[in-house]
Image (cartoon, rainbow, N blue to C red; front, side, top):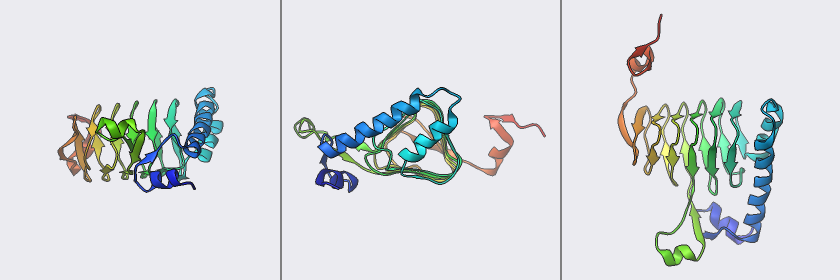
Length: 200
């Protein structure tokens, strides 16, 4: 492991166009291209590419193409994972996703960031900080998760939300910036949408 990669993985500023890191991203782009180019019925071939691409998979998964990521090896998904179309994971740092997680379309999980001041930003330094998503989480469509965010277990994030801080267990949260709206309770079991009840 060279110096820039070690800095990237430790959360320090690094140069993303380092030769080794660029080569790794190009390799990943090749696998992702193959994944996204397969016919819809080639599920087994798609799954094999994902198994070779991601760092850790703990069970069953289904990722609707197209899918994008930077490196792949920094991504860990739990059992019974589902992602709808256009998932983007900028995995310059670790992304850990728990069991029974569902992602709507166009979700963006971004560990990567850039300095605010233009002079340091123009020097091409980047940074990356980890993201963690707990068990039994549902992210609605077009959710964006920024670097260094943790989402607790059993939580629902509303469509279009932008996460700039941690979200705890057992809540519904939404907005830009994303904020907790309320706790999820036992009463929520009887409804499938707002006040629409499951029939007995």
